Length: 114
Image (spheres, rainbow, N blue to C red):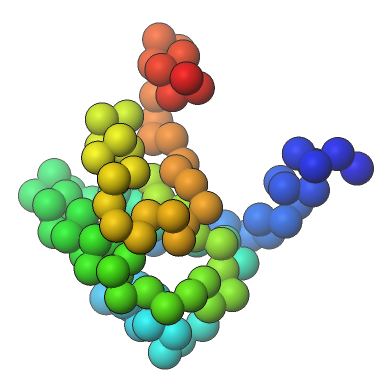
């Protein structure tokens, strides 16, 4: 088994959650175990345009107060590459495994891969 095959199987079932879901802060605080081995906190289509700023603020606050992974691998799904770059500068962002690319067209793949 290659390391890439191991990595894909290690994710297990992945749960996508809106970052502003009311239960997410309890998961971050360790009060409630994450419901899946890997969780994607979504800022893309799980949020309406009017909730995006609140979602980024919620992510910022949770990263600042997070004490550990609490049993799940965490990822963030931004709305765009520009948003991914801005999120990459948040204090504490190193606590997540990485980003999940949003729905993109063929013409947008190269910038994400770079």
